[in-house]
Image (cartoon, rainbow, N blue to C red):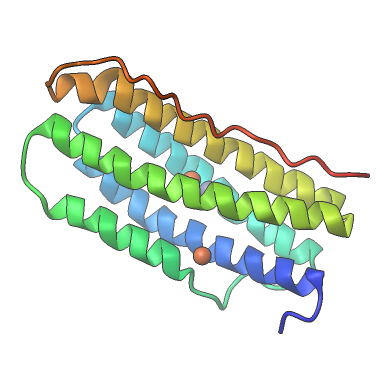
Length: 181
Ligand code: ZN
Ligand code: FE
Ligand code: FE
């Protein structure tokens, strides 16, 4: 029941916990399918971070007097299903790598949206410790997205061939929600 801002934040935390838990299972499969060594390493590094995100959400849930389980993030389930389609594909290594990155950054953007909202709610509730924990994860999701996008443009797409035009648009997503008190 969403009868208060706190109950909404508890619900958001459960969704994030489900999302992160699903990614702990999914990322190793993506890493295994990657050919580019930097990409594989980046995915495995983010796997370790993602395990930390799960732990943080357990802490956050406790600080918010709730348990993290009991909810399924449908969006992540869909994003993982799309990523799994790539795993079924055969083809040019660098093109498969590009497809893996395109799938992985979708997840990062979804997580960034979720943590961004949750950080704002924690700030509104004056939940300072919760805010800090969620902000740390949000920062890591940003870094992961930037690293993967940078790898796509810097290495993977050039390796896939084509005209090699320098991309004109640099997507800038870095942002920070600041608590008011
Ligand atoms: Zn995460
Ligand atoms: Fe969700
Ligand atoms: Fe992530």
